[in-house]
Length: 141
Image 1 (cartoon, rainbow, N blue to C red):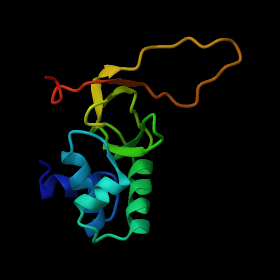
Image 2: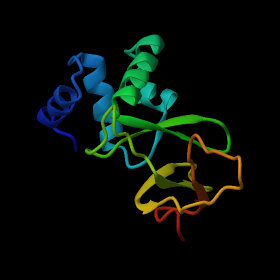
Image 3: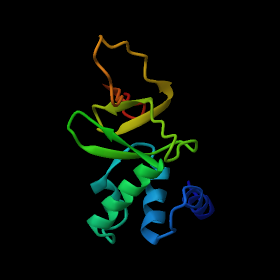
Image 4: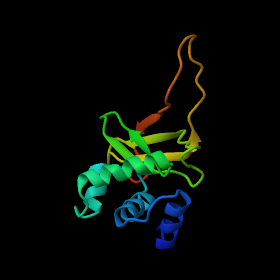
């Protein structure tokens, strides 16, 4: 669990103000074992945060390298906490994501790098997303 001191240190390191909403959102995302949609974060916060502030917080955190987006096959945007090494100028979320077809949770597999891909001539990738689907360890029989 992320301690209040760790939340404060993270916000300070990324040069962000320590607002109650930022602290709460960072706490929720940092302890979740899987990526959460905006709606799921909103529910965990008890609905006490207005939606505009919540999505501005997501945008600020993403621009600062605190979180990254995970988009699944249903086009639902989910958010996951980034590694400690990420920042606004060195934001790396080049890892595989895994969607459980049973519980629908999406996990960041930080230890699994996206394989190198050689594109045909005149193709240039702008982003790299790699999503595997199957059954997670919690849903295994």
